[in-house]
Length: 326
Ligand code: ASP
Image (cartoon, rainbow, N blue to C red; front, side, top):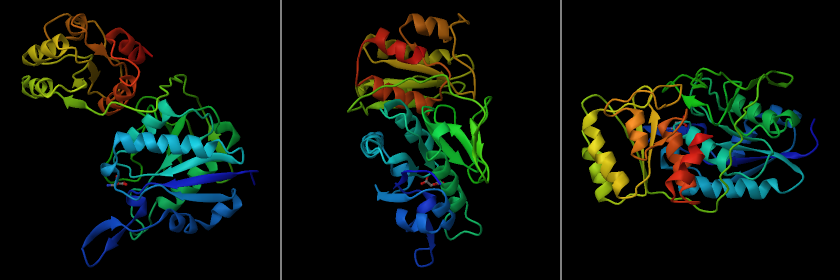
């Protein structure tokens, strides 16, 4: 038994949903308190206190709500009796919230995001076991200083690397190429590796008007021109391979840059970095010479979150580039 308590902050998601026979669909229905009460073995881990933050499907989450959540998590963790926080969350966007928290939290205490693929009225819901594993991790001294985690299916993933890979299977969260940081066994929490990147963007606001466009063969710049017309604050492009895009997209990007809109380029592949290697039209080298920021290894959805936070600090393209160099 650990000394100190863990806060469970409920935000919603399938973990807090149930089938409604009248409306014939799955809807938010379960409070954070009820979620915790459904896991009696928590009593053997540590005292748990529940905070009801919201109860929404994670597609109703927004970066603004995520930042408020981050501030709330930092606030409760100031209490020396609190060992760590578990955030219950829908799995559809959990990786975006986890990544935003990972960048913006001041605390070094463990923060675990957890969800479920099966709702509480399903046969063998995965929520209770996932919550138990997340609370064990949040209470674990070895988890301090390792960043924000997604704890699902007994595995501990880094918020920086984890992504949802299957629409329905409980074994959906993967950290492609690297694997989980560790796992939660019956008797203990086991870490096998540590994340090296400890980047932070501490801010009290973010710039929401940032869009992500995923590119495919034969695409033109129609969507990018529309974003430039809208005078958006930033654009993230998910290109192919090392950061190559169809040539017909280039004029839109050139115009975005000429109008001072930051453009970040990432790859739609599951791993690896965009890199200035290829020099042909639409490749990363000429794009970067145009002032396009190469986004490193992160996914489009995470690059968008990072750009929103980074834009709260600077509009300078060189300074923005440094955030993505890390
Ligand atoms: N649609 C749900 C959500 O993200 C999916 C889940 O929680 O697994 O809110």
